[in-house]
Image: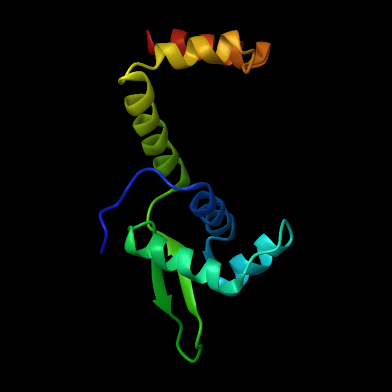
Length: 126
């Protein structure tokens, strides 16, 4: 098994979001969900899900009397996203979240309600 990596590729994250939403999914379930957005090969979905299993993000189970494997997630979505954000902040901003927040504010990526919620959360944590 490959070591668990917090960072997922865009395609891997897209698949993980589908499995989180469905709770459990076969390759066919994920393939059909992706087909609603864009054309993709079934084998690409199958390969990526196998990679996600090897990386420790998906758990594969067999269902009695069924040939298809059913995949579930190894960790909750919030936990994976938290690890990805932490890894991004460490890699890009040397572990400091302040430059990221400054960037988001300057680029107007945060709405007034976002800023109010952040201010509320800061007050709660003081």
